Length: 133
Image 1 (cartoon, rainbow, N blue to C red):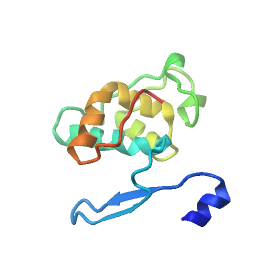
Image 2 (cartoon, helix red, strand yellow):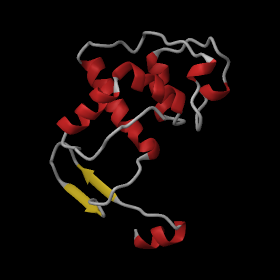
Image 3 (tube, helix red, strand yellow):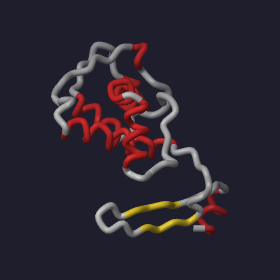
């Protein structure tokens, strides 16, 4: 991992936990890193919990507008306003091609507080979403 850090000229850290067994692996785990698109896993986790609890439905639809388009990565950035994907489509776009507009739609639907509370409840107290992407 240190060699990879030198090659890319960046800092790399890993903290992983196997949820069923509780086993962990950490390398530079006490360091602080910007999460970039990895935060989308936290968003996905809260979304699926709310689906499981019957609070939201993935078959509901969301409407794309020019104002909702987020900078950065994503398919929705280049599509026309008026598109009406399901929330399931938005999950797929958020995780597959890492679409920031889809992530922001989910953040607005779920709430930053709920996403952060889910991470805290799962023992990931250092994972925080601060704003939309």
